[in-house]
Length: 298
Image: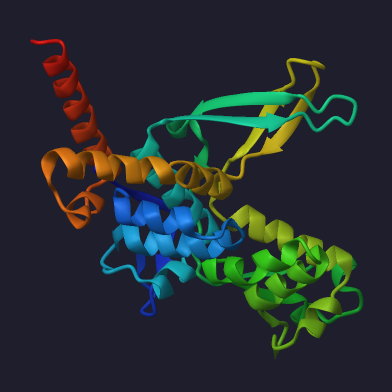
């Protein structure tokens, strides 16, 4: 599959308030593979920005889709584009190994699924700004007008900033995320993290729940049954790490394939690296079949 056309589950709202959902996705080339295979996996959110900006031809009427636009895409839209890019690069089937989380087990568990079977829920309210009213229990003695919360949904720029903090201090990372997404609390424009810290735990929970309800969703949590201990568990499937791990594992194969085609066809490295993965593999397979046929004296 050389490319893919579809619709984002959320969509990009431009400065004029126009919604853009239809997208065209180009397959990875050898140059893209090389770039991603060599990049540090700890910067996975930045890698998603980079690969989307290289492979998305357009979103609605917006083209090219540069990194600035890519950072403004909703988190679920970025996941969906990455999921479809993985599909057109390596095929519909996904096989991965996880480990049973039960402390007295910890055995390896294999998961198999098809990309088209991953549940995708599009958002109904496209925003881009939303408002809600905190409950009296969450807002305390605040006046009704001061219980109004105006916010946007998390995007790629938030991901890039928050991701490195999650492992170090999850509470601080979530506070920073809310500080970036909440635009107003009552009549006050939000400008400082201290305003988020002043919210009650219940208020924060209500805001986070409403954000989750409004956002489009890519369901990547897998319900598994451990074949060793027989117990059920839910495992989050890390699409970014898995896909980039596949590309990293195939890095050596990429150079062997380039050498193979250059040696026999006398094509330049640039010509071969400009091919999509699918096209390069077609030539590799054709050449291998032809060499086998000649070796057998046919």
